[in-house]
Image (tube, rainbow, N blue to C red):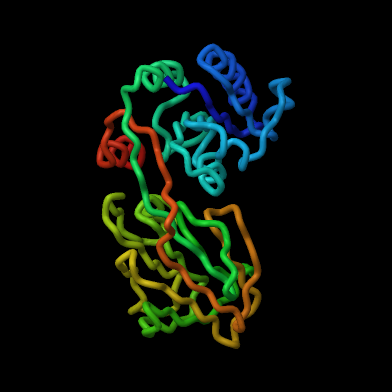
Length: 272
């Protein structure tokens, strides 16, 4: 089976580092392991960049919470096997106690690869990192409202004052978007969600837009300090002069799955 593995994890959690060491030693018996730089010193081995891992690994193992997975997916397009050692771990496939059982299944070829849509984000013509969960345009000052216009294929759909707006993938429908009243979306649906963030307007409600459309956001001049945030990780300031557009990416987020359905995951992790 797979001879080249990538290993990415959250080095700030002691139990994650301990599990990563055991996983690395287990995988070294199966082939080469490319260990991400931030954890390599803890494991006393040579570190590799995300770019090197993506180039050389056939399957990438992540250990941590959803933040670790999103960090990996921002630069990795190889299939990801996500082991949860964080919180809810909605995107993870197994809990840490089942890590080695899962790895054995992968080695024996008993798994599927699920592909999910990502969003391509462009700011003033420059491409930013893709979003696996969501793009958020939000006020940088607590309790200060911003004013914006939302467009779909250059047609105005909403003008409002709000704390911001979330543009989410189906994967991100169970994340930040859900917390502001957005719908839960089956990840096989080819659509994105536009969810206002604390809108100061009764008529401002979430929209579901086909993935092949272009969403544009225009800040109005009276907006104060504003940030564009991708997957809670990448942050850059934006102004009323900024041109912001969101479309479907040609890249996919790829997850290793053993058969548990999306609906089972929702029942098990969001309704407990």
